[in-house]
Image 1 (tube, rainbow, N blue to C red):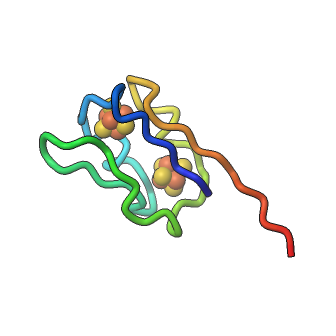
Image 2 (cartoon, rainbow, N blue to C red):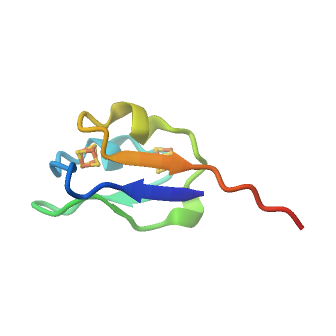
Length: 65
Ligand code: SF4
Ligand code: SF4
């Protein structure tokens, strides 16, 4: 999974981190959102849908072996 955070658009509201079911995101007070545990991301898309500033994009990366 690839988590793209457009930091210019992020208003540090914390909604994405609060609702992410796996704790993949974190937002420290006054800081922009960060993907702190990309491996934990399931690609559910909740953060993308809930971000009021459209600042997150989740890209599902196919891995083939
Ligand atoms: S929900 Fe959007 S605007 Fe709010 S902290 Fe997350 S990325 Fe930033
Ligand atoms: S897609 Fe789902 S699991 Fe991944 S960071 Fe967003 S809310 Fe969390």
